[in-house]
Amino acid sequence: MKHRYRPEDVILVEKSKHGNFRDLDGRRFARLLVIGFAGRKRYRTQDGSLWWCRCDCGSILKVDGGSLNSRATTSCGCHHKECLFTHGMTDSPEYASYRGAK
Image (cartoon, rainbow, N blue to C red):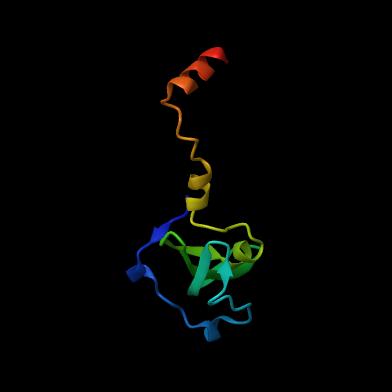
């Protein structure tokens, strides 16, 4: 699960001090709207940019720019939760008969 932040936790970083990268500010990626630059991430073999994003459900999260561009991250996790929703008939007598016959 991705870490969610409160609006007061969001600290925008000045982009000009962090070199060349694709500016994603204001762009939408599925359910995520990029609201600002969060800084650079550095790993042993690669580096990249981190972005503050607001999901359509209202959550704020920090997302890797590569994940946004590759469409690997499209929401804060709320879309996955919505997909897990069942038909809502598990308490009906018809469903009990169906499960009994299975």
